[in-house]
Image (cartoon, rainbow over all chains, first blue to last red; front, side, top):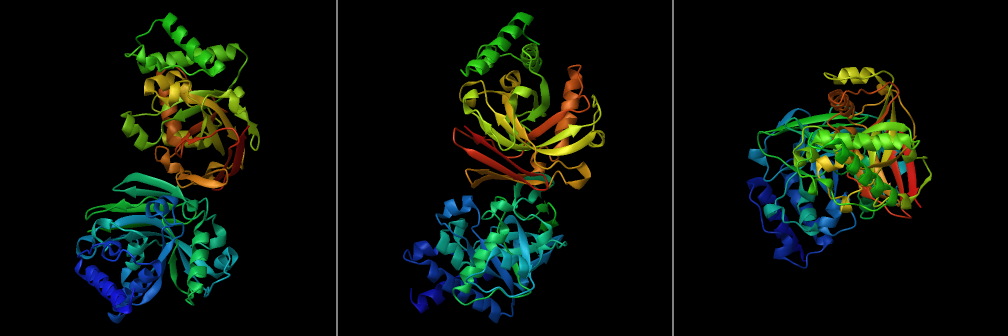
Length: 261
Length: 262
């Protein structure tokens, strides 16, 4: 894919984000699109957001569950960028009707780093050592592609379908919790809709962060001290609409709540 | 109650024979479409009486169909209950004789052991929590005596809720050391994660199973004796297993259990 095409798709996705108007899947518009093209498109989209004054605060890892990997026919996760305007605090009202298109909620563990991590060669021990604390969070994914008709290239180009993030208010040192077996309970409008455990994301959320550090390291991008890294959903995605409220609690870590308006 | 004593005895004998000979039968409601829960628990009680007469002892009690989604799907308000005998006890880390069963499946559960009698009606959660001695991880082996696990609620109660065996061990904990609703677990089959879940999958709180069990037993003139080992219900979907399969379940705060089918 040439630079002009990449820029064109990046511009279109950025416009879709701002105007809340979806576009046809890139994999239909340009069937030969590669994963590399898709990441270049996501960077173009990001450049627009940075030009608007947004600041990168972290990264998200997606496609970490076996179910989603099977659905997208891939064998590895993907990633996107988090900016300051995406971040909400627990209890927040997320303006879904004004800012989102077709939001879906995921429950996750966020890693907050105290040291840079630069792959390749990063191990789980390096990730634990570089992690200041972990926190519970909701990631509200959204798609700028019509009806979520995504293949892996579509979601990668669209900043890994990231929407907004709602962070909990408790932080736990990574050495103080078993991140693989810790349970998660997610409720929608007061009813438990799903449970899961850390292992739902690549066997352990730590594995996800290690994967990201090594993947980005190969193209010279470090994970930086202070960044928030969302490690991947531990439960199935839940479509949400204005009026819904959700809460989650993760065993040994803490909880998080959000209302959609 | 729609059945007479002789029919209860005959159906219990048929289910016992199916278990003994590992020859599944068609579900009993095909023949007795009006069978109710009283009939079903009466059949289960006859099966229990026969097992005790044959020298087996009661090892514990169990709840089944404890997920709210499954209950909604089956349109029922409470789980189903059964019992386990010592014959179904398998050691942690040991081999399970696959050929003792028809089509075994496993479920990961939280088990609770009581230190006081619990009796309904009117039993409630705080009363149950006050009566808990300690918490154990457990894996239940399920095996329906009906063909292809095809059954309805009433038939499954008569079949002792598909109870077949169990493994426990791990790291017992006091109730105050663990948070049962958020307690997570990971089921691995042959080294691959196949199921994950947390305690709240069971009625929002695993001890809620015991509340319902105590109240259910009260209607049948029974209670939960002190010292009972109670498996509170599957947290994950049942996983089919066969000869050669190895299962490991990792529990948050409760250690691991492993078993293999030989």
